[in-house]
Image (cartoon, rainbow, N blue to C red):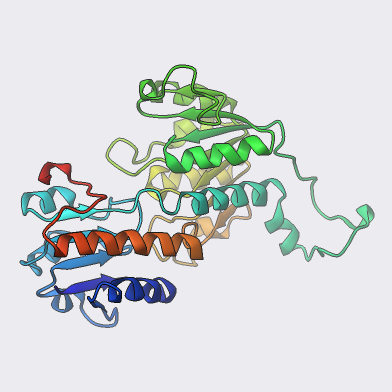
Length: 327
């Protein structure tokens, strides 16, 4: 069984290598300084990080049986083409939900407490005198309204933590009818709404946090019209996929102070070009797609990946298969 890893994170590579060796198998990680396709020839399994698995890649791997994504999002994989060729696509849907939720709360607090501005002005953490405080007052999140777009596993974990901060939580989900009646308490939210209520919820929110997958329906879901509906004091958080938000519209909204700020852990082209104009704005925060990369999450993710690889090696279907048509 020839297993190839399209992974660049050294810690993740180390964890994954150990998990696969426990099964008596081995994984070979590609050298990103060399052309990728020749290195993938003969691969039976590809473990993918943030690469695009397109028709060209698939053509170079005629013996491919499984494309295993290292996270939940499979928008970089041509799932339809894989299905046509009988190639399993699997993801890791829940292992890093807590890590991502914690990061979302971190970004909310980072904006609310205006940490970037304080750091840029030389603020000292050791200063306790209010007469030395620089810049505008910060805000409490207690009593503020949080709109969660996407009430999946991660969205629920964010809601749970937001309620602990005393926030009002309104959720948007594609199929609200699947959430049983009277179950707001179960999902740690005050209201569950369909996508038809998106504009209403956006106009009332102090903070909007995105937790929906990227697909044809959600790409550019947050554009100029949606941003204009938001409060001038509102913050936008995105730890899902950058393309759910229209980049040009966000830049204009931030520049024109239509919203107070935005914090992303994802970017439209990764790695981000440090010269991009949006990165020059004081009210835009970017972390380098690390929300799900905690030690605990990596251990859980690599265990699930190893289980899927072992199952495919035995001729079984992966546990977390995405293209259910092949089952």
